[in-house]
Length: 184
Image (tube, rainbow, N blue to C red; front, side):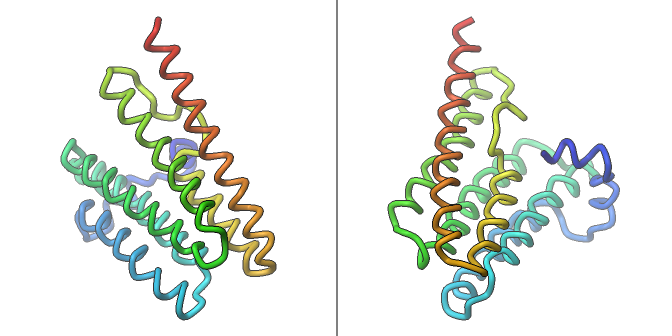
């Protein structure tokens, strides 16, 4: 999805104007997610606002790294690891509104999508853009799900049930595609 956005918006040019290093933006994304937890749980801040900020920071960290020529393996590792923490925190935003097992099922699928990509790529199989429900798509979905929750909590619950199904199907689909490609 981000690759499609790059056709219309020069993200790297935007990244060249940001004064923070890419790793700092990655850490800021985690800090926003973590700081958002009490804001959502205690003060009722709409989750979609915080998810939107996290998503914007996620796009910008890579743009800054590419614009400055600092993109590399250490930053990619840090970004991927902190993104998993951020993903888990974002799913905790919904813990108060949905069954805990639903948050767990969503977390498993979310992590497996990323894990299968990382594992397949470590085996020499390119997986970027393979399948559906990649990180940007997941964040956009959760933004819309939380917007539904503003109007009706039962809509949020059903949207998160659908999210859990989608991420787990996406993970299984990615496993299938990678397994089939590796067998060739």
